[in-house]
Structure formats: structure tokens, C-alpha cells
Length: 84
Image (cartoon, rainbow, N blue to C red; front, side):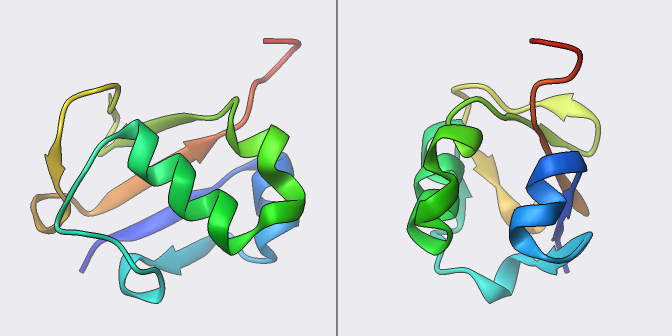
């Protein structure tokens, strides 16, 4: 089962290093926009943070491509590091 892995300030907001994808209401196919929308809905106080995050699926940048969540083990949520 796929899980999210949160780093730095995203971990502080979520309150955990890992969360199961099943903890969130997501369609089976997602891209960066859908992932951001889901996190903003779950943690509205951190909207500005999540809007600047990068998402990696098993180490590869998600971007605009649609992913099938069941095909991946880890979705990393990376805030900007070192100013950008």
C-alpha cells in the first residue's frame, strides 16, 4: 500500500513522517495539482506551504503526469529547501 512521506516543515504540519494514502480521499489517478489540493483540504492552515512543495513518486518527480497510486510505494512531499 502506498504511503506519503513528509519532510521538514510538512512533517511538522501533518504531525507524522508517514501517512497512508488511504487516509486521504484521493482518486486512483493523481498528479501534482490533485495532491496539492488534497493536502490543502486536509491542512488548510498550511496552504502556502503545500503550494510550493515538490512531489516525488518512488524518487521520480510527479509533475503534471497522471500516476496510478497503486503502482507506487512512496510519495514524498518535499517543501522548498535552502530558499527554493
